Length: 628
Image 1: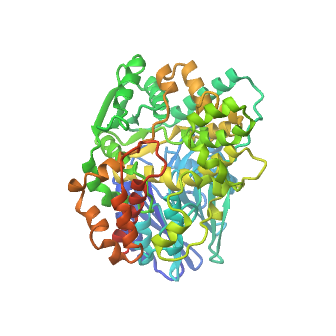
Image 2: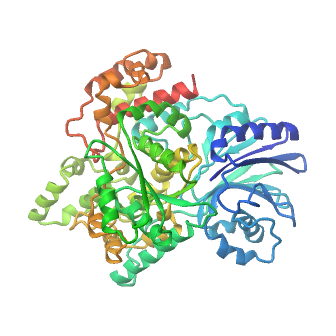
Image 3: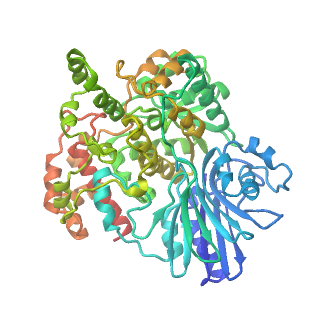
């Protein structure tokens, strides 16, 4: 929704801090094109500067930040929105307000409750509070890390920002590759945890706060919330569970439609965005819907979208569907997308995500999305595979034969299935093994383990599916999935809202038995979602039972159109770009380039030569963009 930045320093003057904040704001103006402000506060011999760029969505007249308390000078800047601010305002109604929006409510809750104010907030947010009485600056981030927040420190002070480029500008740091993150990236396709691909730049973890002491100049980081599915503690019937799911989802959508500008919705043929759009259309009949299509029928969902709208004709009767086609020429935009995403992630879906966000931004400032349902309710095939691996030993021979027919990858997975959930989490999606990594990077990497600071508090008593879900929501969701959604939507000054990541809905899911999330007999993930949405007629029966189709591109087929590829692709794999960068083995990357095939490759393929090529391509573009 906006962009924040901050500087804490004993060395810089007020004028220097304000000047740097202005430059930091200009580099994230896309996050807030409507207005900007910088303020500098004093605490003894330390100055605290807070900067803000605004995308005006709520409280259009008085909602500018930083917001400063009249009573005690406490100040806040925050990127995002607290959706339950109307309900929370009653708890601080005795305070003197200068705005009508959500962030001042959060400020007064902090002044009343201290750190515990974070337990009250329902939304997506990342920001900072300057507290002159307690002589602290508190950085905070929402439970699932929907909104980003980065920080670093130098001899001049402590710096933070919603994006990395402003952070480099404000701190005067030269961007450098963090070599220790390379093996992790080329294993996982992203860098989980607090590290980034930039040396000395860290991200504040989701569900955490950073407490900076203005007296000592030191800081500590603590988690205030963690997603740990437990399950099997639901005491009510299946029907009551279904009803409760619908109640929570409908309210999550309802409060995310609070806005002083028009709200629309992204839509695919799957159950997640379809359910969100259906509930939103019931509230707002003229809802605009945005989607992208592909020529390849394996990836195209436009027919499914149209069928969904016909089947739910009453709720979608007055909606307007707007779509564009995603073609191989879209690869031309990849260097610009890498610059916008900043964190090095190898995710083919960044291209259609950017396209649909660009399309939507031509019409509205705010859209709803279905992100988060797969991570919270176990929608990905890997979750079904893990459930199958756990249950196969309890099956009869006939049941095993049928299961292996539907999950042929079990034959290769079971003999090597690790007991350690950290190793097991990546086994089915590992991009390069240890020997391949050593060759690619030209050095012995050793075993690449999941970063400790990205690990939730899982233990052996948890069901393996719940272990997977906890790890998914702690790492891949914030550092990979919603990161790309935030950066690409904000590239187009578009706010995206994710009802399935309402923490009430997530905590409800955490308490469900595993069989309510994955029904192995019916080979179905997100089982409770499908049953509930179908019975309550939120979506039609066909959509409710439609198999998960990953939102990605026909990458292998596109890469094989060699004559029409952008020049930068040929320069990387056939020219001298990789050799000039001096990080990757050029001979190996060329062999990979020549091995790409589209045979047997589809949207459900977890690892292909094209995926490995895309990781090299993404990294090479990142290197050229940020370290050249």
